[in-house]
Length: 287
Image (cartoon, rainbow, N blue to C red):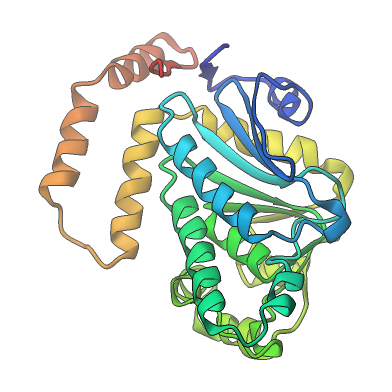
């Protein structure tokens, strides 16, 4: 398997992540496909609009942790296996079957929070690809990613207030960090449905394109993010998470990141490539 990705990688080659399969970790309705340095987490339950069962949430945690532990991965994409839907969120049928069972509800929420927390802990850039409805826990998945690429037929809703539920606090915090308090209040307190353009203006998504343009748009994002030095990318994503959590001063951890970069092969390759007028070639470490 090839694990090199240059800054000059072609969009056409990267877009093959929609089609080529090098490695598949199987779960019928949730799986990860690895091609080169890109891992695609694929939700495949179209009959239920990609609603996630408790088993699927648990599997998502395992997948996120497996990706986190693979130093060869540079970008993670989360998408639907079919066009026209991202995810309806948690499986409402399970909630109906356990209505009034507080113990089950607490365990269910803990499982969802664990999965979304594991997604946020992935050390490389993560991209949610949203084509169609993105509801409830599906919105939680999208918010847990670093970037959200949506089509113009995407719609968004977090409907906890309409179900007599409360969106988990870590996800409320992540939403407020993303869109600000006012937009978060509108999303959560109304439980309303918002279109892609509203989501873009509210900063809930980073870009909106036509559905037909999605493969090329996603390829562009992957090429830009995957072309960076992987060690630098991981270190700076970690630093950003520290800033978001309230840290403002350098620590031993952040100083060590800087020292490691200054003495590393990536820095030497980046400087050499710059002086030679060519794109850098950053070689990923072996697993």
